[in-house]
Amino acid sequence: MIRMTLIVGGLWFSLVGGRASAAQLPLTPWESLATDEVGEANRSGDDLLELMKREFTDKGKRVFRDAHPRGIGCVAATFTVDPNLPAIYRTGVFTEPGKKYDAIIRFSSSLGPVGDHTPDARGMAIKIFGVGGTKLLDDQPNAVTHDFLQIDGRTFPAKDTHDFAGIARIKLNPLSIFGFLRESPITHALELKAVLDLSSGNPDNGKGLPEMQFFSMVPYLLKGKNINTPVKFSSRPCSAVGHTPLDGGESELRNDLQQRLNKGDLCFEFLYQFYRDGAGYEVENGMSDWGGDPNLFTKFATIVIPKQTFLTDEKLNYCDNLSFQPWHAIAEHQPLGNINRARKIIYEKISKSRHASNNDTSKYLEPTSISAFNALTNPTYSVWDAVTVPESN
Image (cartoon, rainbow, N blue to C red; front, side, top):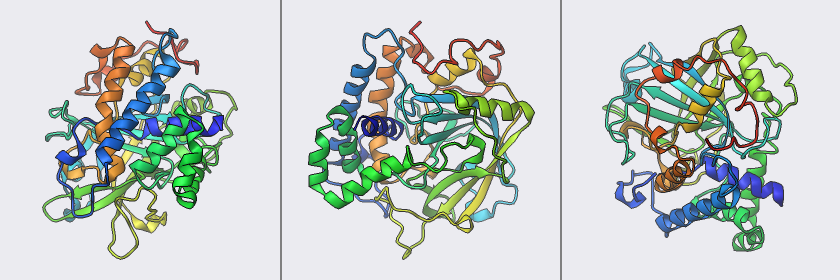
């Protein structure tokens, strides 16, 4: 039971975010508002704040972020639009074939202050710079960044916000699992199994991050002059990546990633998977699996992580203060479905509370370029190598 509640809390923290009511945004033809969806999301936000207070308040430690609290590290990268991208797909971030964006990528785990050697879901959040257009976040409409969030699992572990709110509530009150299972025995049992499959049963456990494929899990929009369709996105290695045994320590993923970057560059393809009518694909069901066949994915961009040192106190601290969330996006790539709409509602409540608790609200400014990250050249790595939550400054 303890293991399950830890997993639930971590995954929910990693999959929520926003401010405006979901009802304020027009639904696309593929969406439908669930009963009491906004109320459910707001109650979930309150539950998460209660969990944060319970775990961190008055303990002399930093409050971990709401999204994937265990930060493995951030790396500088480039995100280059495929020079041969067909004209029909040239919209939003992908308008100009061959365009190269600077980017920061944050790798993470969904559980709290536990080691890399703990079986878990892993995240790959991409923040690209130099993206024009009004952002869908109310409090950052003029930001010049765009976020793509991914986890190493194809589907979300619950069909909708209501069910995942019930799963998250198990962490707050473990006995609520009995009521949750009574409500819908088969569906909810499958959802609890999906949570475990994504974390403790994840087939990527024991692999290095450059060996993994990451997925958006839930749908987004790809909208332009000649296209308007739901999509899912993914990042996978550009070519086969050799496996190197991890060291078994609590920072094994960090260490493996740094060792690989000491030797040379790393590469991922950024791909889209298109919605197909009549194929059983669903937008409002987070557990809807659109399939993992490589032929179902179309390459849109190439991500290169150049040789670098990212394991320093300065860079890990900077990384911890960055914010990544799906609604930090332009309209051409609008998040879809009730899971994403819940993330929008909860974002401001959780994120601002965390920064206020850590007395670092001045650091909660969206960066305008990668320059500040690249300027952090002090090689000291002595505080942030620990897995435990660093003490507040």
